[in-house]
Image (cartoon, rainbow, N blue to C red):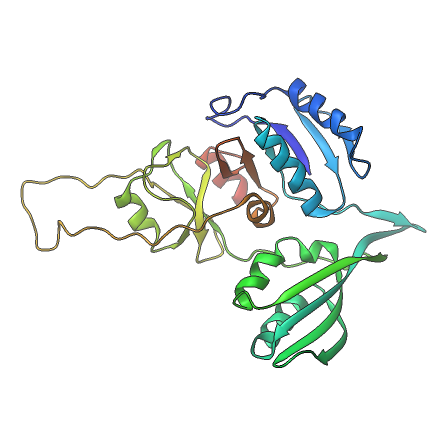
Length: 294
């Protein structure tokens, strides 16, 4: 993952340690006792490439830094490829899932799209099935949350590194787009009410947002820019039902681990001692749309 200095509009408002020197010193200090960690300086003075033993290992480090008062942005996790005898190879994990029988079809279908290869399938305890897979480590990034949703929280999954094998090709990850804030301001119930028809929200009313900040997940595949700060225009006349209270669906609570699993390559997680925000790498809406058309 890439750890960088927070360059968003709210940079420096919530953290004590915000500069590249602070982040660099903290990461190299962590190397003294965290033997599984690797830190590499990049071409940019504000960014550092941090490698560890999986998402959880790096998430624990980010959470620790956040609680110490650090403010930073982190990128989507990427696996470490190797070249073996001139062939590009990637890490393969051995995955074991234990799922209620009624959900097993959905789990096998989703894992198949992520290049998983079934090794064994057998009945487990009453009404459950145990299935073993070999799957590229890339295929597991962002899958745990989806797995818990598909099994209604009743499934268990465990995985461990198995070997390096030849690159398996592109892996399908998130298929839904995001709802992105169109302008800076404070989210308003009226604006959010219009946005929730398009998908599921990550924020409630009264939250400070900025242009390019991700406020929810779209029900369709494309990204959607919405003004969540839009207020209702007041008029002299009242129509029937005009004053009825607008009801918002409770927002999805995005933890640090969920956020890191959720983001794509063009997105970042902004981590501060007080908040975890999701944002686009390119904040300006028009610039982002031009880049998407290329």
